Image (cartoon, rainbow, N blue to C red; front, side, top):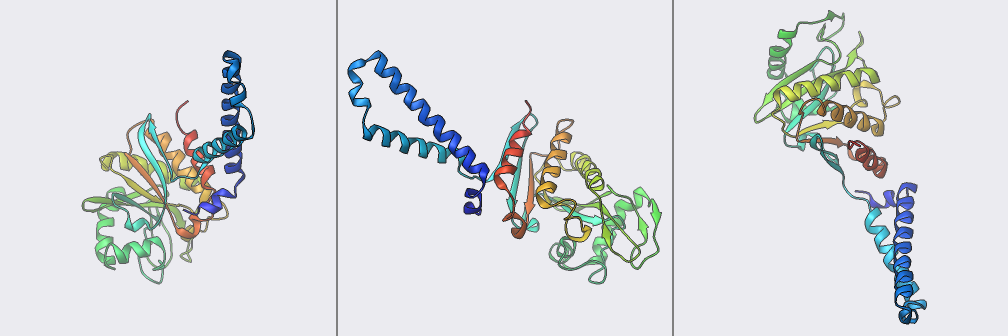
Length: 284
């Protein structure tokens, strides 16, 4: 965690000053009460040493309360945990979510970039065996049926935004989540409404198949969908957490949601604001 970046934010200093002054006021109130009840102790509770001690205690208390911590929140209703962590999605245990386009293209490298999350998933988890992955995807997609066709290179059947194709990768499930569309030039594009719709479908499928196990989700909206200007990382994280909590209040989704953020994006986040946002999701 980049602590120094957090210490430069107004949110940290506001919390620190409020906590420190509150602590100082509380100590002063105690001293005033003691002086009233025990006038003989007035001399011992005055002087430069007492002032310095009070200031030091207040500063320490303010730092303890306001110091940046890992971004996570545990909830009692619904009983779950949300964590925002820095790292590689593919290194997480538990169930994984991988974003795809509505045609579920998997061809490397002409259509799907090997550097994309889908490309890395194919190479690192499925050993580059696109044929095997396609067979498993088709087992699910054949039960759904396509919603339309598109004339382009690669796969041409469109399954719609929000389609979830779970693939068993024992002992976990990898959810291939369609959150963007592919045009005739094999360019992916998406919308915020489409992301929300896909997340709603994801939580339903996780509730059905995931046995409440931990699920790791990437920041959705950047990369192949070219939505970073519409849905920057900070907003995408809030959208994911909010949709998860709404769904969790209707039925059990997962004991733990991990929103995994790449290092380059994580260092630019307002982490204190995100912690405050997670806290605000607790039922009032």
